Image 1 (cartoon, rainbow, N blue to C red):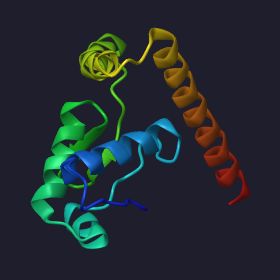
Image 2: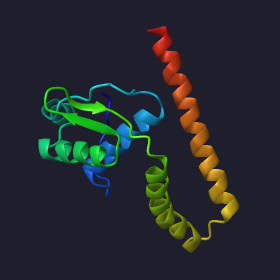
Image 3: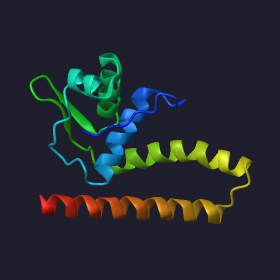
Image 4: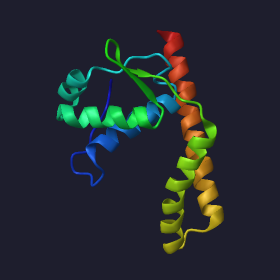
Length: 135
């Protein structure tokens, strides 16, 4: 699993790990049923504390992206409760939009940015599917 942690970022390491796994799911890099590395293995691979990985996996479980199983470990299992997801997105967007407004970002600029992000994810998803077809 290719995870890159920015140890100089103000964003917590467990959040960086969560976000990279979520992006991997969104771009079809990780699929329903895929097993994530064990807590110990992930910690060793990226050079962080096992408790940090454990916190990330617990967060992903709580947010409905993985299922934790004593025998299998963390397995990608996306909870498709769209209303809950939209509610969470609204909470996260509220702060981002407020920051944008405070810094003079217009509604049109924000919409354009969201469109660009969706397009980037779609391109990454297509590329990931093409890579899998080659292998």
